[in-house]
Amino acid sequence: MRSQLSRNIISPLKHQTIPIRLSPTFSSSRFLSSTRKPPHSKTSNKALRAAPAIPFFGAFFSSNRTPEQTTDAMSPPNQRSEDEWRAVLNPEQFRILREKGTERAGSGEYDSHYPSKGVYNCAGCDAPLYTADHKFKSGCGWPAYFDSIPGAVTRHVDNTFGMKRTEIVCTNCGGHLGHVFEGEGYETPTDERHCVNSVSLRFTEDASAAKDPKAKA
Image 1 (cartoon, rainbow, N blue to C red):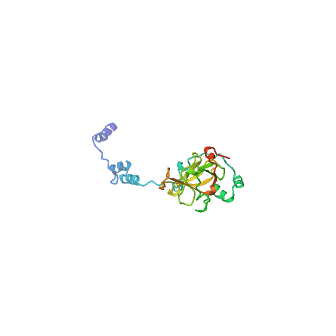
Image 2 (cartoon, rainbow, N blue to C red):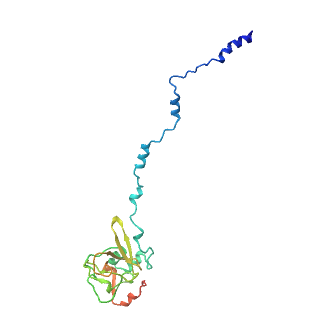
Image 3 (cartoon, one colour):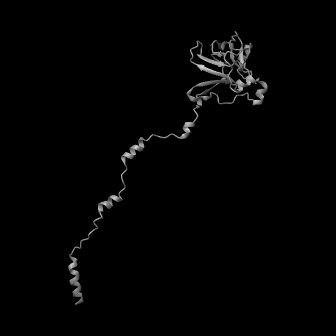
């Protein structure tokens, strides 16, 4: 009797579908959308690509100097200490040759000096720099030369502040001579003007000195 009663209770349930009701606040589509990764915003990507690059702060303090600054990176052969230079140079020569000073325009002894022959040597080390044939009248107030003895003068180019200035020094001792200017329209073979301080020079009438390009100590 008990087994018959169980069959009577269970058998109706085999063919009956029991509905499952979900909470009205639950949404399967909402659940699926919440699990998806949000797509990348096209607007934000465009904004990032359009954003200007910010330079490093170091760029604001970088040197404007270039590899062109010096045409000869080697140290001059004739090197002396500051005390040694003071012993062989007078104060004005030391100020100009070693401290890169400049004499007043028109004050130099070689400004109006135009010999027919001779050589202008470095006042510091006596190395031959220019010949009398290199000198010309420029009217600038300093001795002017359109060329130098080959290898006697070294150029150092400085592009600081966007301005090109070319210093010229004695190749042998590094003594400051002045500056060189190009393209000024002088009727010379090179269209250059080596503007040199008289104090940096020492003239000799012995033209044979120019034949020896080797520097003297």
